[in-house]
Length: 390
Image (cartoon, rainbow, N blue to C red; front, side, top):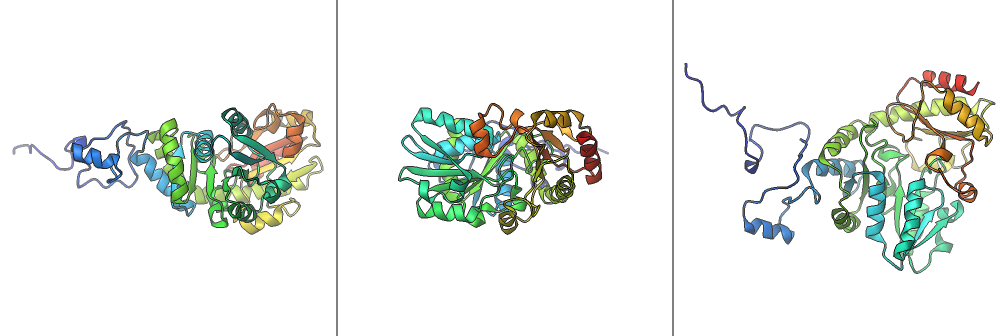
């Protein structure tokens, strides 16, 4: 019997020929290519005039990245989304696309430390940055000037988990022509939908809950097509797009974000309730607790209260450091949103190097401990915290 010279299911397809008719992958493949082919000069000319949707170069766009962006847009009920190589890449690219020299950027004084540090650098380029108190962030109408173009805020806020009435901020800013951007990393799209509350752009450090496995660094923004189209050219110029391989992993993770976040929510509530009954702890900050100062706000705009729990040991750094050193099940590490529970001390991580005035404005003490609750059994985590508090 002669050996067939051609078998359709094993033939090698040249890149220029596209996908074989029998290949229908369940997951989007990793398009690990820098450049894309054009059949002729006319198609390239049409591409440059935006008359077709072909691709030219992976810094501009890549099918694997676009697949992750489509998933994020669905999660956020957004018209469009962009994915970046890190959360800070998303922050810097978005702000540089939306403000110019002479503009004023309004920012909550209680935000992620590196975001604050980047905003302070913007003053070198002629952008005025004003850091707001919590009350000013809640109602920015008195501080909005004709030069104000953008207001940036978080909810829940890192690491105090204070919450802002998102709709109120969005309504005030929209009436005054100010674009709003919320860092919704701590909530995730599962627990909070800021775009439906009127915000213009929602930003995530996708390294955290969107990826959820502590193996990808990424950032993301989502919003209306018009505002995303303003950010996209800046991403192209700065080269802050994510690589296809981590984009593939991010897209994989977003398929399970609902079930993961539900577990984070439930376990974090159990841990927070236990901590709130322990006399060795001076304060527990978790939006799901009725004792939280913004519990009513969180309950009105969140579907779950998240996996982050912060507690204070009487403002004592020494006590916080001793607890940190004694933990066993909970791992000592920065970041959040992964399978493993992590502990960090804000004054050594997100708020490291801040002045006492900055700490007071952010509501952070030197005795605060921040927990990112993972997917372990809640009783194992409680037992570990109990022995560490001893």
